[in-house]
Amino acid sequence: MSDIENLILAFIITFLSTIFFTYFVRKILKDADVTDKPIVTEHRHKTGTPTMGGLAMLLGAALAASVYFSQNNLVLTVLIMLSAGVVGLLDDLLGLKIKEIQKVVRNITTKAINIGRLTLEPGEEARVATKKAKEDLPALLKQKMVEITGETPIKSEEKERDKIVAQIILGVFLAATGAVSSTVLGFEAGIFIIPVVIFGIIGSINSVNLIDGMDGLAAGILTIASGACVIFSMIQGNLGAAVPFTILTGLSLGFLVFNRYPASIIMGDTGSFALGAGYITAGFLGDVIYFAVIALAIPIISVIISLMHRAHVIKLPVEPLHHTLNYKGLSEKKIVALYWSLTFLICLVSLLIYQFLW
Image (cartoon, rainbow, N blue to C red; front, side, top):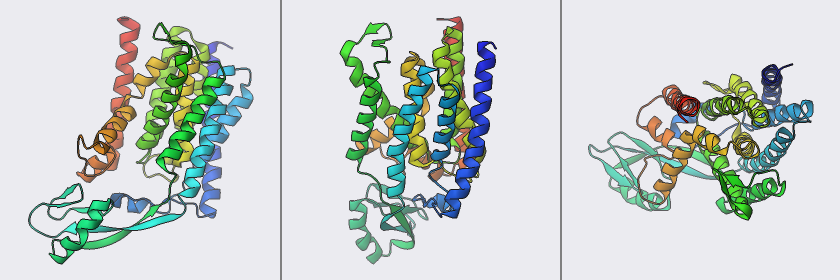
């Protein structure tokens, strides 16, 4: 078979197996009552949806690595995905425990009021999440400026420090393989490729993890970005890069069958950590890291905006950005369509520039 036919077959095997594994894992999770407990008020209707669906993608990836075990880049990519999936799984398991119950309040005045870092317009609701907001609440209740409209359970999660340490270890795993080229954009990085790899792993995992907040959002973006990386790799004649990205495309699209709106399963940190780590690993090993980063621009920009919010450079009513858009009235389906469209446009323009203008 030709290279194209091999890639098509690899995609079909991964796509169909991931659909099967997702159906199978969803049933088990549902029977075990391993379900989501959204902390965003607008997403309360998602309560009860099975989470940790990333397990299905890990099974699909393992099958692909078994079938195409002679493809070294693919096997290494899947090993990093499995390692990252375990880290995400630990966070998902910890998330089954409720850390605290946060109150939800509504502005019942005719003017805007401040609570914590938020400004609530008349009739708007918000969770009392930050320390300052909790300190402000008693006075606002006493002045009859807000009313409590409900409560939201907040799940436990790993400390940010522990997550970063785990992600650094994953980066060390990848660097230790010696399979990553020390040349980046034509420059010889030498030993400094190690921090570059670690930073790439951390950035990609957190980008995909942050964007995974709406039905089909992360899976759709990774389908488009990975598919674009396949095309870019084939234009270069780089089959070693095309195979892992083909598998990632099949995994993401297969999971999307059940994860699209309204989702009947959520990937959880198990899936977002695995996809984020696998995506950037495929980019490094295939030496197409620059295009892979461009294709993932929307999640990366979302992370930058969130970091600016946390650094008090800007102020978002709700973090991350896609939740702010939802808070401001844009429907979930429209937000997902917008993010998918922007990702597709960025990938298309980048491919055209490379093909005809580079």
